[in-house]
Length: 109
Image 1 (cartoon, rainbow, N blue to C red):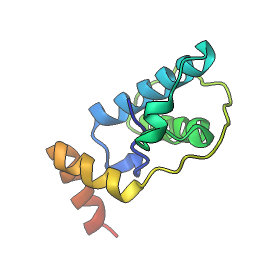
Image 2: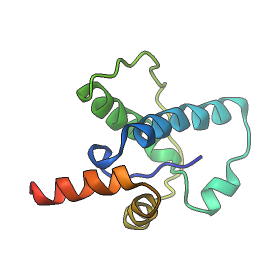
Image 3: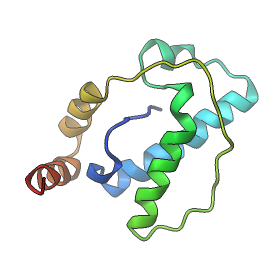
Image 4: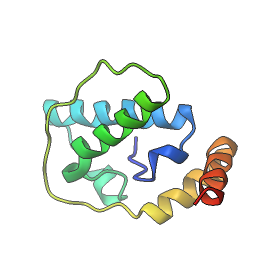
């Protein structure tokens, strides 16, 4: 599980929907009182941005024609910032479709 914290517009459908799912996984862990120390230590999760990130992902999902039916309660917590540039590099190294979308977005600016 991880929050990529990159522009949702450059993510392929699989990564977009996957990160949305993982927002709900993190929320479930919080509700059940499960430890997220490993994710925090590896900078894969930022509790303070969970709700906002979920909402940004949903906005992009809806723009692509996906129907969203899983609202997320408001969460907060201690900020554990994620290095978005490092996440972007990791994502682009893993996914050709995300690389294509990223290049397309860079050329349209």
